[in-house]
Length: 164
Image (cartoon, rainbow, N blue to C red; front, side):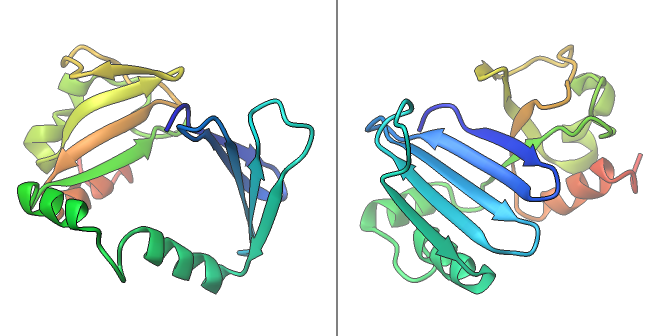
């Protein structure tokens, strides 16, 4: 999957878009009231969507569960999970008003305080792999974090300002 974009739609919700490996554009609009729209374009320059699907909140949750493997796991995914047992990966967007914004990895001591490590930062669609302690987070950075699942609760508390 290429460049993943997130856009705030004031008064509507959020829009997510990405190009598939096959070159199709997928646009997902999540409305504030819960409705989801999935638009499929044949390429990024298409005049209009080839397909559109509108889902309720419940239907979107069900689709996400299916796609996420809650009902069926391909054999390859099962083997990968066994190899990565206990490892949890999350992607987090740094918001403008976040305690992370404008602060360096080393200053925050994320690994020491939460057990979560920053393995990459995606900035302006460019991955910064294995960033050092001097890297300063900026608003809109996408952090790729790794750690045990239970460590992410500590990370969330730190980001929400409940821990120092």
